[in-house]
Image 1 (cartoon, helix red, strand yellow):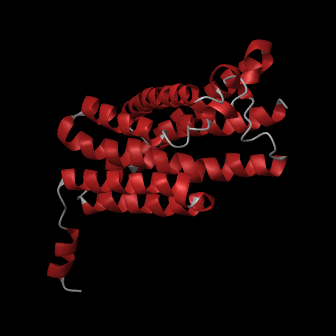
Image 2: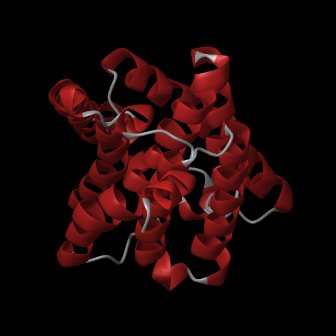
Length: 241
């Protein structure tokens, strides 16, 4: 390949175009993982993560744009370790108190054995959920919007989309959680209210994750918190049966 051809391939596309392609790809991924090909969620998520990083490169960016610059990895790991420890301590307190212990119960995971829980916590959650969502929302979308609009707009944009991302996976939440089922399960209104609540909660969590990335200058910090809240939930839920 000639040098001129290589330069043409590397010519950056406009940031707005890259954001649009990213949003379309995430909509298709959400439908695939929740409707079209649920059993293929892990490989789909891995492939989409690679594609998202390719979009950043296509738009003229690099590892720093997604919060994975080499010189920030050590700080990001320290933040992640501290956040995992905090979540573990909070979950341990919740498990020890009778009035919060039932919050760990989830019908979707009640039949999982020890091996399945380990697979969820060590494979499915980090590589099928956390890596995709953090690269997509706190990495690519946040980084692309940050180029043009600043931290606040990048946070609000990526966090709003992060909340909407959870519409489909939260539709069964009202009946899956025994703590919610008596008041919300079994009715359309209850399902809608719980789903709206889940979207708002995850959008707020997205704002927190963006702030962690900004303060640590690393995507590893929100990754650590995200993994801890999901994976340790599986582990504590299993231990409390």
